[in-house]
Structures are given as C-alpha cells and as structure tokens.
Length: 550
Image (cartoon, rainbow, N blue to C red; front, side, top):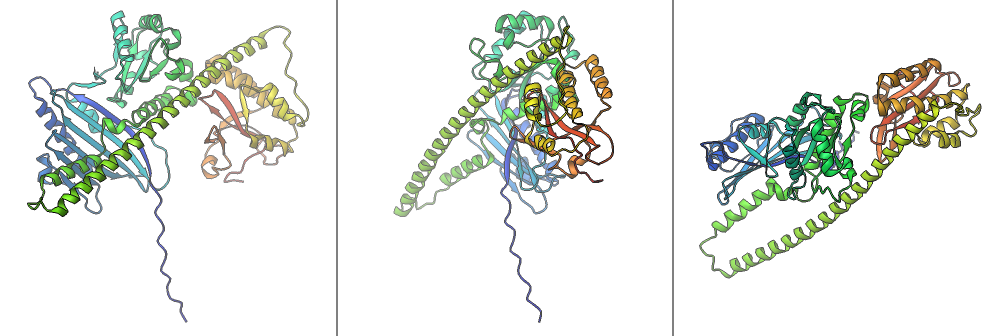
C-alpha cells in the first residue's frame, strides 16, 4: 500500500540582516537664474529617471507630476514615492535584488525637501538586507546622488562641496581648514591627504585624491595638504594632531585641538599605506572609503537627518486622515476614537523618545570604548615601532649574542613568549600543532619563526627594497619559500582560518619546505599579517594542512 504523500513543513524564513551602508545629507543651492523650487523639481525629476531605469518599466503619470505612487508588480523591483504639500517634500524608495548574491536586497531611500530659506535639503540612504550568505561587499554611494551634486552648487556641513580636491597651501587656507575641523555642527569626516615635504603637486598623495573624492562625494570633505601647509597646521594643532609627509588623516566630528586625543582621528603613515595588505595604496584606498561611508550611518541621529521612507509615508497617511474626516465627526464614538488615537500616538512618541535616549546612551558608551581602544592601539603601535628600531640597532651592534635555538620542542611556548613578543602571535591551535609535531628538524621551526620576526615584520612595517632583499636572502639561507596559500582557503575554510581579535581570519600566507606530505619531512608555517596591530599571527605549523590534493 502506498503511503500518502506528506505535506512538507515550509521552512521558516531566516530573519533578515539589515545593515545601513551609506548616507548623504546635503543642502542643494539654486544655480544662477534658477529658483529653489526649480532646483527641487529638477532633483525630483532626476531621481524619477533613475527609478524608472532601475525598475525596468515606465512610471505612472502621477509620478511625473511629482505625486505619490506605488509600484509593486511581481517580478520587478518595488518603487514607491510619497509627496507632501506642506512643507513641500518628496520621498522615494526602491527595493532591488542583488544580481550576484541570492536573498540579498539593496534598498535605496531618497528624501527631498524645500525649506523656507530658499534651499533644497537632499538626502539618500543605501541599505543592505540579507537573508542568505553574508557575502562581503564594498560600501558605495548611489550614482544618481553624485549626478545631483554635480548638477549645481551644494553644501555639506555649511561648506561648499568642491568637485575636485581642495588644495590647502597658504596660511589662510590652513585657518579655513582649522575652522572646518572645529565647526561644532560638522558631522562629516574631513580626510586630509598630505604631500611630501616641499611638494605642491596634488598627484603625489599616497592615494589618488581625485578618485577618492568621487567615491565619497557628499559624504566627506577631502583636502590635499601641501608640504608647507603641513608645517603650518602642526604649528596650530601640534604634531600629534597634524598630517604630514604623505600621511592620510581622518578628522572625526567634534575635533578640539586643545583637548582631543590623536587616536580619535586615525592617521595612516606613508610607509604603512605603501605596505597595506601587501597591495599598498590599491588596498588602502577602498578600505578608507569603507571607513568613511561607515561613519555616515553610525549614530542614532542618522534618521533625524534623513527620516526613513516608512516614517514619511506614515506622516502622509496621518495628514490624509485628518483632512478626510467624515461628515458625522460630532458622533460620540468618533470623538472617543480620535481621543484613543491621540493617546496611542502620545504613548508611541514617549516610547520612541525612551528608545532614542537608550540608543544615544549605547552609542556614547560605544564611542567612548572605541576611543579608548584606538588610544591603546596607537600607543601599542608606537611601542612596537620603538622596540623594532631598538632590536635592529642591537642586531647591528658589535658583540651581539645570537638568540638561542633549542634542539627540542619541550620549551617551545616559553621560548616564543620570550623571543617573539611584540612581533608574532602564536594562536592556541599553532601551539597544539607543535606539541603534536613529529617533524625531524625542530630547529627549523624556531629559525622560521625568528626569520619572520627579524625580517618579515620590519619589511611590512617600514617597507623598502633593502629589507625585502634581506628577507629573501634569509628565506634562501633556510631553503624556505613564502607563498600565497591559494585556493585551499576556499575549499577548506575551517582549516585555513583562525579566530583572532573577535573575527575569523584566513591564513593566506605560508612558509614551505619540501613537497612530500610525510609530516617528518614536510614543513609548513601558515600565517597572516594583521595590518591593524602590525603583527604576524601564526595559525598552524609545522605540518601540511589538508587541501583538495590530500
């Protein structure tokens, strides 16, 4: 007898992970011979053209009248807009599927408002909603927002937005920069890219200034500081808070030169940028873009600057209800219903205020913790640089004693703590690998670790062909090769990664000797370079980890 087909229980949909990606909130000024109303209309029309292109279908006639509409056809991105007459404002939202990552949506919200002072307030927010794989991505600003900013004059934090990097060269320029840095109402980062000593050529910044500006247009102030202006800025804020010699500094909001800590305004030195993740400026520039755009969506007040589309739609619906009250509004039940609604609105407002206060408290506590952590990281970085410099001086001094190399692995942990501190971190998994090791040449394990400390770490921190050549020679003397770990990191992700500083990190580099997979004769040392802490993190040694071949 055939069993009846069982009705499958529908899978419970995963809760969406919602992440704000970027936000731009600026003031658009009318062009010459243009009114604020015309700039408002032109801005809305530009967004509508983008919505029509992205939605893949013609917008209804009411859309082109700048009125409210809602398109939610199956199989097409949802597009909707809400218009308010008083104050004159317009908001829109587009939900678009990611073409390359399943169950990931990109939500774009736009707000345009005409204020009483003859300016147009414009804002856009990009949001990522994920129910599937949390695949990595680079933060960005919607292209239409950049087109709107290029269409006429605009202000960010009361400062005119420049379409090309602003050059800070004279004493007056430095004073204007300092006024911007200390402006109390400033919310956007100021990114200062300095030039070499004596240079006034903007092409000599550590990363391309023009490209960086275009990627952060409307989200940050980008300036280029000449060599002479660097000295002028140092005179005013002190060297600890200045930017110089091709370094790049991000000045956060709330800058105060007399009381501020340097760690709150991250500084990347030229040599660190040159060696960033082994790719140099090509890797540092997108990292910095991500940091700047992340700062635009941090903080509880981001929705105060740009109310969400749902909030605006609720406001519009409430106004419609109040304007369309039925003729029998004197009825006792209707009066009571109105009172109940008012009580509910008051209660919701009180709850929102309480929520906002708690969120602000949490944000303040997080900012304080991050500042404390940044200060500790900066201090640790300076100490490591000092230790590294002293060790190099010691290595070159006459009568220097070589580091003892044990012949057995019995005291491996204590040797690492004594000889590698401040340069290499041995993960617990790496320690376990050594404890279980049957490798025939224990001395090579010690020598390989010492090689990373004495040659690889200085090469990554300071760069330079001389250090690279010394590192290559040290590898050759031990018959070792350093290579990228390769595709094995994708096939066997758990084996080729370790937990470090609260994140899963890939062991993307390894030292190797021997091709046989016999653990007595095959040596491998898997590690990664942590750019933030300027340390080598060793995740496994001395045997070969599994890959497709093994």
